[in-house]
Amino acid sequence: MASTDILPNAVPDFSEATSLDTSIQSSNTPNYNDISKLDDIPKESNTPKPIGRRRRGTVSQQQQQPVSQTSLPPPPLPTHDTNNSSNIVHEEEEEEEKVKQESSLDLNEPSQPPEEKPEQPDDTDWEFWSQVISDYDRVAKTEPQVLLLHVQRGVPQALRGMVWQLFAANSKEVKLEQRYMQLLKEESVYEKAILRDLERTFPQHEYFQDKDGQEALFNVVKAYSLYEPDVGYCQGIAFIAGPLLVNMPEEEAFGVLVKLMDRYQLKGHFAPQLNLLHQRMYQLDGLIYDHLPHVYRHFENQGIRSNMYASQWFMTLFAYKFPFDFVFRVYDLILAQGIEALHRLAVALLEKNQSVILSMEFDALLQFLKNDVLEAYKGNISALLTDAYNIKIIPKRLDKLAKVYQVESAKANTESEAIETLRRQNKLLSETTKQLESSMTDLNKDHLNVASQLIETKMDIARIHDENDALRQQSHDLKKALETLPADVELRVKDELEVLGTKNSALAQRNTALEEQLADMEKMVVDIKVLYADSENEREALRQRLSDLKRLMGQH
Figure (cartoon, rainbow, N blue to C red):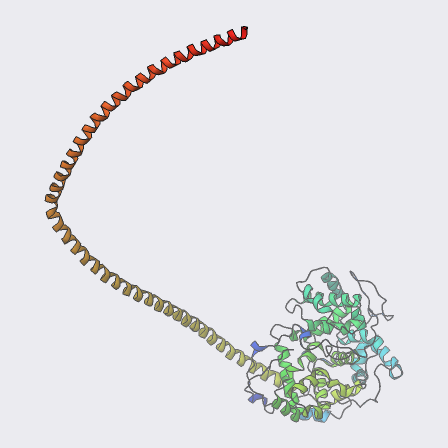
């Protein structure tokens, strides 16, 4: 993923949040629309097989979970406040000292559970979870510590779908499901983008390799793009919807997705400006400064900011790069305690890997944070949740960081707007300068052309002057010639007339001779014609005599 510092100018001093002077450049926001560009396609491991999925409407029917959820009451989730930032540990505290006094309660720091696999049936208190399913409101109000401890150990896989819906303020609503079925019949402008990303979303998971799983994921994401047009579609939404679909039917997954986006404020992670995501990254930097100052300084020295590695954690609720057994536990924690759990988990992961982090430099460190940070808890996810529970995050600290971020963001926006205005003005001036330079270049070219034409014109004028002088000389010579011309012409005419007269006389004599010769020849022709007539008569007489002789000879 192309990463961009949320606070690129300087690393803030989180020891005094009000003294922050770091500007936030929203124009360098990384492109979160395609989660696949963050890194390689995720590889799932140890993913439990999906249970209890069914389809309605345009998709095929599958077997429903045996426990009915429609009869469950819709109690509110006591572990959330309206901002989704407080939890049972720090509820309604006024100052940090008061929190320290309350930290001795089991409510604040639940005891560490034995090392165990969360899905092991022998460790599941089915009686307690049956009470949660049947009367969640009472259990949440009367036994919040016990509920929190059981969530820490892991919600039973068979009940996860139902429990998640209860945690999400009973997201199973008939109207919402009807709205979902309606949305399936409509067309979304994002359908091609969703279809393009399906094969890149959980490609190693058995359920999503199947056509039914891909169809269910397409339906939920498409329906949400229509349900919340201000958010539309982002590939990260598919990664949030995937774990829900593994544990419940798609119409119920859509309901929980809507609650996550609204009640848990995940919608702010996908808004066009990503302001809420940037704010949470800023808060994470502050928490790292509070809890892991050595890591913070190392990150600062290496140029590592939280948005370079943690943005995909927060946008996909760890579903992009982490195995599903871990992701399910993350959902347990978030749905039970609120989105603040993401900060706890992130700090816990960094704290567990602190020694490794401090030994690495930028490239290796960034790859480690993106791909291998969970290895320290491999096979013991419950330990991570326990560590996350034990991290104290004071809501007032988060609120203070949020306010500082908003102030700095507003200041940065004002400065960026001023800078943008100056940039626009500078751009206009640059364009004007370029136009003037272009005009100047054209004028210089025109000037050169005019100068060249002027030189040519001067040369033409000089040549014309020379030609005029030559013509004047010729005119003078012609005038002189014209003055002597008449006498010469008269003399020449007389000579020619005498010659012509002589020639005419000779021709007249010759004509007379020819006429006489012609008369003689005509007389000769007449004589010849007479002789010819006489010869013809003699020839005819001879032919007659010959004929007579032939006749006489023929008689003898």
